Length: 430
Image (cartoon, rainbow, N blue to C red):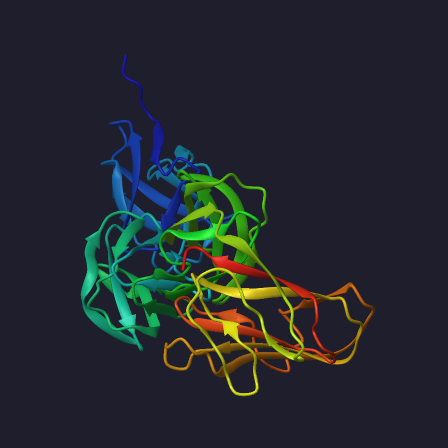
């Protein structure tokens, strides 16, 4: 059975969002006994109506120019029987909106991208914007060719060309492929930098961190990287954070002593903002330093005595105004940490500890490289312990591998029966 005298809305039916464009298609289905229809729209939910067309053939379709309408969400369409206007079909409410493209990223302040990397360009567009062009601008000038043309999607992976000049005046623009006046671009400038990189300069590969706990300086250079995170790994597995968000090189840290000895540790530096940018150096944690105690006893009536050290004997000789001494060769780089002096004779007055180095690598050290002067008052057969890491009158306590040294003591009184203990700290990795 055929139905007569009816009109059914097909589009819009309600809930649609239509752009303001030259042609939006109104669709309906009307019974064959209706020859012509009139079409009206309402902006206020049906409270009042405005005519779109007074009469048009009942063929189920009419193109409506919405470009001049105000935006709103209470639009309705009504298709009426031209002869009997009381017979009509009416849509539910729908929305008319401006045609828009909205760039979502990159828009924020402080965006930095690096050459030879990639970056997501994302945006939204209204339904009538079918295709877009994405163009890079520098200093307000379009860089040709565009990154992509006639793009259908709303997210594009920008492969940053290595040939682009670095600078801080770049922007991204997304425009309608059919109407270049409709576009959205970065609200803030984009900084384009060299390829991000981190290079660790210290410690060196396979350096040993002392098992006893050592303060280590970590140094690096970087390109396009702000702050870094510093982590410790063992056998490729994360072990602990050494430091986070370190702004500049170098960074000194105390490693502590709660590690197992091993040669499978790594220090990893990574970009705090981009963990994909990182560098690592393999290190060892072990016994780096060893302590060498030298003991000497001697008898002398002089007050200026060069200590006859046992060890690598170089040559027993004499210097003007000095007693005989025994020079020694430093086996590694190291330090003279302390000297413990004991005498049978009470000492009261000025005490001097000296260390001499060979000027030219021969067996006679004559150049003073350390001197410590102090006032003492000790009873007979008691000890004086001098920390040689501080309190220098001149020079310092460092010894260089392979150089020849001699150590002397100048006491207030005759040395008599005296013994001396010296403590060295050597770096066996040197």
